[in-house]
Amino acid sequence: MKTSAKFIVLHPPIHKHGGGSGGALVVALSHRTWLLVFMLFFAFTFGFTFITTRDAARTSRHNGSATATEATLPRPVFDALLHYASINDTASGRMSSAELKSIAAVLRRCAAPCNFLVFGITHETLLWNSLNYNGRTVFVDESSYLVSKLEEKHPRIEAYDVQFTTKVSELYPLMAHYKLQVKNECRPVQNLLFSDCKLAINDLPNHMYDVPWDIILIDGPRGYFAAAPGRMTALFTAGEDRSSFSPPVDKTHVFVHEIDREVEKLCSDEFLCRDNLVETNENLGHFVVSKMTAARGFEFCPPPIRLSHRN
Image (cartoon, rainbow, N blue to C red; front, side, top):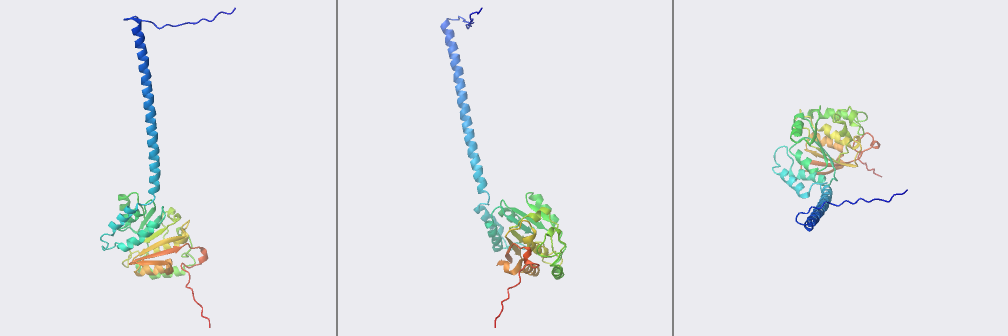
């Protein structure tokens, strides 16, 4: 037998304090107050979310554009650094203003990131590291003390010390050794990391031999007295850079400071080739050397072209 549905109706208690109409008014005002609070909270939350999202989008766009513009050093900063580094350029061991500008011009044209290898820690070290903004600049020096002091003061700079075993006074015996070994240990196309040639630098960190260097500056080691290490090995290594470093670049700019000295002049002609000399600015030689392959044979420089005379 089906029973009919029962409905339970709950009535809110009515407290008659000063009349029933007054209590209903209080309840209505209470509901409206809560509704107003809820609407204000919703509006505040929506507005806060909108503003935060908009600012985040602006920040993201700004950072993106900043990353794009910061790929190279701003021109005014570049010029200012070069200007102040050129002051008092007559001091011993410093490059002249003309020599600095010659290297800086190539750095400015180099597409970032530019790989810049510098032999020697000098007065210009911080300048080179700054001008090659967002690129990789590596310094190689004979003095472990100078390298450690540089890393202590500027921990972000990459520098390594190399034990040079050569001497300026040994120039001609070393060149004779090179001539004898040009088809073996001193051949122009090889991996320096495994070379036993007396002119090879093979004690750098292994990863250094995998960097395609765009620019090489030879301003060290010392070479102004007979017992100094001389720059024969640095120049030989710069010549080998065209083949031994992997992957090689099509062209490498090689700057040789104090090229008027005997060691620098003779070794530059032998390993960088006189035909590759594009500019001489005071005591700075600028070579542009092309990629070298095994097809070259056992010569760093191609033989001179001999014109045949017909009778």
